[in-house]
Length: 354
Image (cartoon, rainbow, N blue to C red; front, side, top):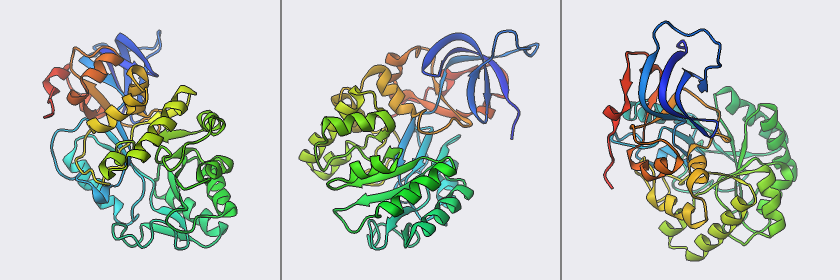
């Protein structure tokens, strides 16, 4: 672990608020303002530009994406939501090699009932699905993923594609995830599965619900306790206009009720390039998620704790509106990179092709 770095930055977004000409501490646990009165180094490094938490895709599958291909990417952090645990270290190492400073988080395998989704799917390699026989097996698997460094636990509640965990099994997953302080993320598909996830205390939905229009009561209950990962544009890739319309309506009402939204694409499902998807951004805007709400979704600070990677922008970015206008010019760096002399982030303004 490297020592924290103290620097003066032109602009920074910290805790959802912009500050200017601020003294900040950069470390393995993110960025914080240095309190007034704290002793400072005799000479402060100067960072010319804007710093913020890394832009995050909260729903990817590294084994199905092109994350190992180098090239410009606005993404600085990602959450893999289901793959074979033994394959993940190699996939993450390859992504790290291709993208400097990438903060790669993972959930480990899909937890499912015996024979449940996505077992048997051609795209799901051996070991990617933990088919659980009983609550004790659920608890053991959650502890194993926590010990391996997981940032979340994934469960599939897809009643349209096979059996789903019963209430006892789902409750055991939720209880053990709470015990190890990890969010439980559910793929909820099919009538009544969102309600079951709510009743069990599931923290996050991996997709905005799309198989039915949820009642306003369910939307309000979900908004009070859950984060929803957007994944709206996947319906366009699938040609599912009705699914897109339902999901957009559900997400618009969820966000309007105060629900936390995280940007996510289901990268690997019809989408392979490891960067921001303009179709997902457009879909979020169609759901009424604009400006500060859109930036909040892109940073997903309430879903994942801060880490060693920082989002960076050139000098003209100074507020949420200018972030949204310049997403194609975002970048990321590990905080240790700033352990140098003064830095002008405009040097790293590597605009992506449209």
